[in-house]
Image 1 (cartoon, rainbow, N blue to C red):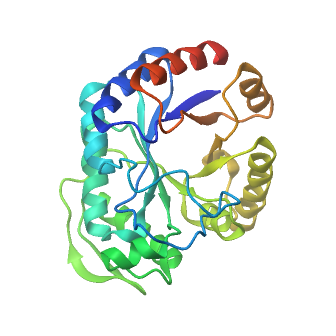
Image 2 (image 1 turned 180 degrees about the vertical axis):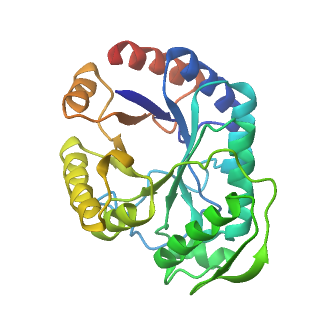
Length: 280
C-alpha cells in the first residue's frame, strides 16, 4: 500500500521541505488543498462533519495549487504531486487546463488532479461563478480540458461551453489522472462516469469500504472495467501501524493521511518519520 500525505495549514514556504522529506521517506504523493477565498460568514453545510463547519478557517493558508505544484516539482524528483481537491467550477476551463498542463510538464508527469464541485455557495458568489449546476458544469469542463491537453486543433459545443476550432500549445506528453472527490451518491456516479479514480474525503474505514463498493456498482453500470480506476481514500483516524494493516488487508493500494492544521514544521517532519516506520 502506498501513502499520500496532506499538510493542511502548513506555510507554503514549508511545503517544499515537507515534500522533499516525504519523498526521502518513500511516500507516494503529497496533496495540497484548494480554496480561492474563505468568506467570513457562510451557511454551515460542509458535508463531512456533523457540525457543518469545515476544519479550516479564514486564516488557513491556501496557495494557488498549480503555482505551488510547479514549485514542488522543482524541489523533488519522484514523488507524485496532487491537488486534493481542486474546486474546478470556480474557474474557467481554459485557465485551469493551461495551469494543470504546465504543472504536469514541469513535473515530468507527476500531477494527480483531484477535482471537486465545492460546497460553499458564498465562495462562488464572491468570485462571480454560478453555484447551481456546478456538477454538470464540472463534467463538461473536464471534457473541454482533455480536448485542450491534446495539443491538437479541437472544437466544442456543449451546454456550458462552445468554441470553434482552436489549439492550446504545447500539448502534454501524458494526461494527469483525474480523481473525482466526494462520497455522496451523486459524486460516486460522477466518479464512475467522468474520472480516472476517486479521491475520498477524510472519513472512517467503514465509510471508505462502503464508498468503494458503491463505486464498483457504479462502474459496472457504466460498463467500465474496475482495473482502469484508482481508489484514493483518506483516513480521518490517527495514523498507526494497525490502521495501515487494516487498509492493506482490505485491498486498498493508496491511502491518504494528514497532520493537524496547527502543527509546526518540526512536528510535521517528525510525524512523517513515525508514519513511514508504521507503514513498514
